Image 1 (spheres, helix red, strand yellow):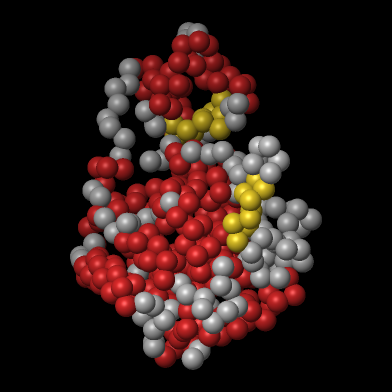
Image 2 (image 1 turned 180 degrees about the horizontal axis):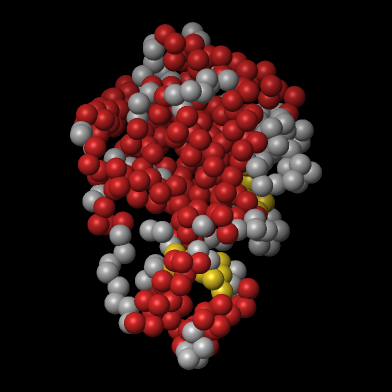
Length: 357
């Protein structure tokens, strides 16, 4: 039996649960794709923007950053005003650009190693060449471990040794393309298997989890699971991190043996997709801030920010000399709280622009 196929030779109970979850996902996807969404473009764009912000925030936190979903969303909406001085900003920008490319150009791109290399490079587009091994296979082991404050470490799972990466990745890509061409496996099972294999190969020194999510989205959209654009699979994994690790470890413990099985992983993967099904059906009103009350002075500040794209407190003090600095600060805090504007930077260097919600 094919080595990959043997890993999805599920038990009878797992097979029944897999079929049930696939049926649920396919039923929703069929209704989603057949619905007339011509009049929902504005709503769908808001859903996509929010999903991109949530996803970028989740991957930044997974890489050790500290950024909220709303902060990531506002960063994405104001990329033209950033200097990309922080790791958070660089990671969010790279993921957002790669994610946008996946959504906009999935039908044009072929699933090749060259495509994967370019996608990896896009993740680190704001890094200098000597900061990351961009687009190059790992040269050092990168097993997945947890680091604790007391200096101790815990191994979650082993990844492919550097010298095996090129051959394993080539074999996986060729096999996946063959399955796509012959349509001999259900797409969701194929994608779930690919995600598991790619995670364990972990081909690059850094950025592998982000790249895995991108490739998963690419394959889903290639198979017309378009609802994935409007949801955050990344946030789901963040919320279920313990179950995610356990599902991988359950299969990985038998890696390279004839008893390696993906029962627990495949159920986790499908359950994660299934949990996202109702997200795109939310109404646009769920994604709009409630109508805020602004006094005349706050409306003037809003108009000045809109006119000048980006302003600082000192600019407002110059344009509104009759208003005290403390009052201007309070107005800016209120406008930020109501999600009317977004702030970047700290203290006197902070700048403000419209939140573009």
